[in-house]
Image 1: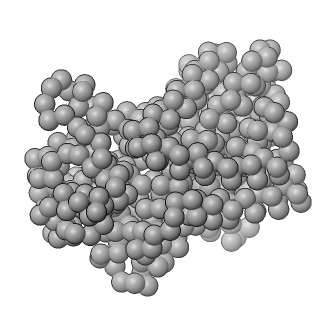
Image 2: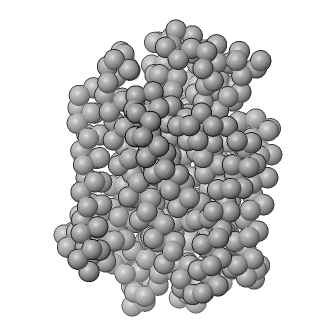
Length: 448
């Protein structure tokens, strides 16, 4: 009865009235003030942006940023900034779609595409979620190994228990879930702020890294890592997630209310993604300043970075802070994968599984390859699997971005809240750039 009441309230005047909304009982569950100081309204809408920002600083980012910084110094810093700018635009579009239509991206795809196309899109998105979960399993297992000496294989198995943490938080309400996320984000931010202070990188070198270099495209190794950074930064399943969780706010479901909600939601996600930019840039800058500058261009593995940080910097706490931030990142990332998996499965297939079952299935699919690769190749194989997972994520991006841009550019669907032409052109340019980079990567891989 509660889900039906929410559906009736949140889809009033919508062509989808009466259908179960995204996230069921959590839809429109967070109250927002209709008046008062702007800070109160911003605080009420703050939350979804921080949930999606988690996916932009998960363990997969660590592997690509460390590898890029140690191999190419500050050269790929431009890619980190560009990826984050693209993410801000795309997440703003995802929020707009959810608020304007009362539909998340998966539901919109089901409404407008044929069944075979929807199945293909669903499979592509599931592959992206599994790749993301793979990175989380590896990152959390590595952090447990570095901090407590737990073997990687056992650590990967232990990560299955985080399913129950996510379920507990969701039962306590969406605000509790958001508070947990923000607390761990603060831990990550503080750890890397201290790391940057200890490293003291050259300001000139950092600024030079913000200028695009031809080496990014002409060097296959640099391009591979650059696309890995792109895949680790712009997360395809985050577009599905954001379009759903912005609907947790109880804003008025009329044009004025939706327009105002879009403004606050975009502000929320932009602020949160600037925090993610700091963390991603900090990881690459630390790797460039500590490893590349000392001639250690072979550092690709998170464990290797952990072992070298304190000796090279001469500060014992440096490696410990690194591992603590990694553990916080791995724990945080479990939330986005769980919610995204639920949204994608329900949106595309109208298939509802118990939350615990959906989470355990996804996590087990990710654990098996990690355990197998660790057993056969050790930590070196795990590091390569981590970077590969980010490239797989990047390859799935067009299957989420193209439908999203198409929907928010459709006046028949969006009404008065359709995006302006200049923004549509920018969004299509971003989609084209991602497709071209992926095509270049495939060509280089097939040509050897």
